Amino acid sequence: MAKTIKQTCSIEQIAWSDARDTIKPLRPEFAKIIDELNPGKHLPLYRARYPFGSRILQNSVFSIPNDEQELVPITDSSIPNKIREQLHYSHDQTVPVGIVTHNMAESFFEFKDRFMPFSLMLPGRIFALYRALDSPFGLHAAKIRNITAGARSIFMLPKITDDAGHKRIKREFHIHSNTPKSLQEHWDVFKSLANSPEFKTPWYVEFIYFGKAWFEDNENDPVWTNFYRHLYESAWNSTSFWRNYVVLDLIFSRALSAKNLRPNPYLADTVKHLAIIGMGAAPGFQLANNEMAGPIHELEKIYQDIYQIRNNYTPSIMVPSTFNMNESKHSIYYSLRYPTAFEFSPKSRNATSTMRDLHEVKHITDSIVSDILSREDITETPLYRLCIDALIQFFHSENDALGEIQPSKEIFNLDPAFQENKKRTSNPRFCDTAPFFRGCIRLSSKKE
Image 1 (tube, rainbow, N blue to C red):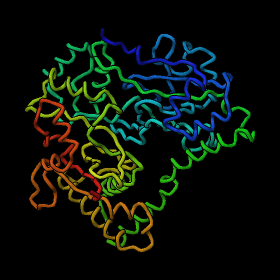
Image 2 (image 1 turned 60 degrees about the vertical axis):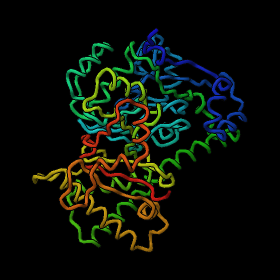
Image 3 (image 1 turned 90 degrees about the vertical axis):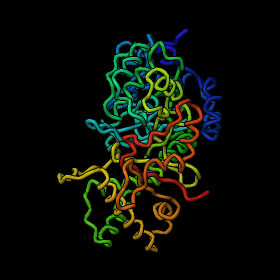
Image 4 (image 1 turned 135 degrees about the vertical axis):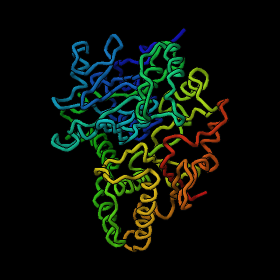
């Protein structure tokens, strides 16, 4: 029997005794603290499940499933008053405090056709702490954040712009999405497929929300000290990089001045974002190797067997991921064809090409790395460690006459993830001509 979206779109009130065994393996210290509080049913929790692609937060509009298992804004009349009162903390409140307990969600910014993944909400992550603990007048109150169930920044490496192939999957799964013309449009098709009654793999992200009663009139109660301390420490640790962002700005400015560089501002912003990705403060992209970000394996199978990707290319799906310098054989990618930098100065109006831009990005990167490694006053920073421990490589699907940019076909031999991907499909050919690889930067650890 085919599943329906309703099987993975639900919310239910639960007690701590119901949530304990789920949360304890993810955050044992937090679970111990709550055990000591011995909370009763007057402190409700809410287990919510969202199917792939659900817009949990869109321009500060927070949505949850109603009794009909439809996703609606928290203010919708179909939401029971008791749930609305417990999860709508205040007039300007968006997402209530919660913890991710199954699969992942993506927090991102969206401006016109530009999507910028900001953070990955993985199992064990406590979220929305700023709203519960901070001043209501902080910049976090800006209504520009979005959250989706699963990855929003997800795309297939081989082109999937063939109308005939797209019509086959539309007929098979009874979807209405248009043929995607850009990488950013792949998500809409994947979302439609995953929520089709014909799709075989149920996928959802699960959150456990803390009701308003958990934060009423108890912050100054000594019994609750450890609870609040844990939340404040979690919030503090999650902002470590951004509290020191001005230092990164200063280091970059000093390096540009020392090297007498006056680069294209847009490309300079790109290089700075590469550093942010390299320090693990923002996501880059990696080949999907599990189901955490979405129903990957069935999507691969659909595009292999029904869409029938041309040229026998392996149906490789890329998803957002964070870089860890301490992990060997782990690669993260950034592409000039899928820009995600948080700062994006206007592009130069001068005629250029992706290859030319990639050369300039490499030149800026090499110059800044050289300056950083010459400084003794920043040797204890993660940026200095990044320059020591990370391998930065530049790729393009076209041959580079100067020999500085590597051909993208070499990525297959450099990254074991693509070799594993080939083993689980019958399509054996690595798509080295993918648009994403036309101006691509790879970060990997030098550690074996």
